[in-house]
Length: 273
Image (cartoon, rainbow, N blue to C red; front, top):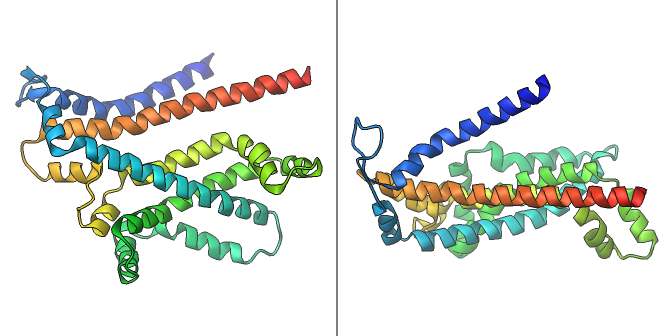
């Protein structure tokens, strides 16, 4: 009983930790006038939402969603291959190249994002790569360590014989992977996809460096609004949308993962009977 109380208290404190910063943002997004030292706004309204629409909230939101989606797809696709390779090589003795590969994959995480973006951007400019393509490439590089090691952990937790048994029953390599391995990895793939999406969704530095501020995503719009004085309602709306989209996706993915686990457990139980 005490264990349940401890888990409940930890969950409540965690929710409070995330909720406290969101409350002022939520209040500001619906405040037309809120002057110190008033605890609550003196005047409520939708002025912040009107300002956000005039500033280009919807186009910036669509660009951020598209950028995050493309980065997630590419980073997960590449992470599936590298994560599977690392998972298999980790059990093989004498794989000397594994350390070098780990260093290369973790370099985007260890190095300062601005320095890495500047260095890679110079190369991409010399190769005359379009800004949009360069932006996607750089953010995919930043997201790849997260997807690779998340998926590597998923591959390590799987029974490698499942795919081998499918191959013995006549399935091709691709069919065995798509029908057996990938469904078993579905929760891990969803986690990796969400992490990669966050890289593209929340990026400001790489987008500003590569495109020079010409590709206005939601973080770029927030940075522009934050540089001006008296934009608290506008910043409240932009920040609320910026937080709300990933939170919604997290709740949806969590619901889907719970359903997937429940179905797999039910199937396992029915097979056992």
